Structures are given as C-alpha cells and as structure tokens.
Length: 173
Figure 1 (cartoon, rainbow, N blue to C red):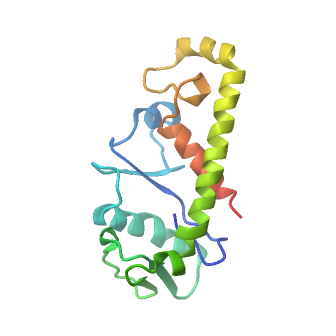
Figure 2 (figure 1 turned 120 degrees about the horizontal axis):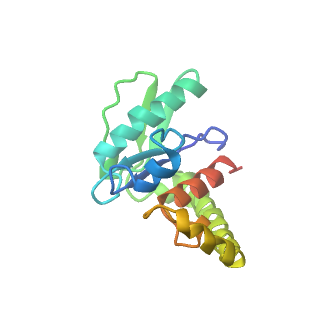
C-alpha cells in the first residue's frame, strides 16, 4: 500500500501470494486480472524482485497518471526495498533504521485502520454466511473445486480477500 501525505492519492494494491495465478482468479474473474495487481513469490513476502515489479508496474504508472512534477517515495530501509530507479522525477528516500513508526504514518495509522476495517468487513461476511447457510449450501452443487469461498459458506479464498482489501482501500478516507 502506498499513498500521498493526505491519503487522497492511493496506489493500487499489490497482492503477493505463492501460486502463479490462483485458480479462483482464473475461474471466477477470467484471464483479465487487471482489477487486482497480483504477483507470486515463494514465501509470499516482498523481496527486491517483487518490490521492483511493484515500482515499475504499479507505482510509476500511477504517479504518471495522477501527478505532475517531482515525487518523493518515502519508505523504511527494509532490505527488500532496494530498487533501481531510472526516473529523474521520482526520488526514493529511505528512512534511517528504527524511525519508521515516527516518520512513516502509513505504518502507524493508515495500515492499522485498513486492517481494522478489513477484519470488520470479513466478520460481517462470515455473519452473513451463517444467516444464509441454507441458501449457500444449495449453491455448492455448481461451484468448481477450489473456487468455493465466503459466498458459498466456505473459508475465504484469495478472491474474497482481494475484494475486501480493495473495497476497504478504495473507500479509505
């Protein structure tokens, strides 16, 4: 997640998972996955390759589409955040060690609030599933294996998570 200082200009969210492309993305959403930025990595962590991909394919296009002039990307000094930046109008500044929580509000406030809203939305979906249990069980007859999620009375899959995170991030004030 990344946004400007006011929080009004938010980059699209990049999800990181282990599979190349989760089955539910292919089956339910089809081959066009532009609605969510997704990449895979063996441990589902942000390493330098994933970070470079996020920078090149998410951050730079978003900056080009929404900003004019110079842009400062401020982030912590995580070893996975080492990228090659050929763009003269984008400056990348790494914070010194152990000051992230004081000078990077995304970590301290915004991400905490997004997580809180995500958990609330997930709990509401689970409660709705319990309330509609009979209807959901009848739907199970036509659901492809690996694609049954909250809408079918099963545990959340990557698509459920993506939808909830994107909803919460897009509505964040």
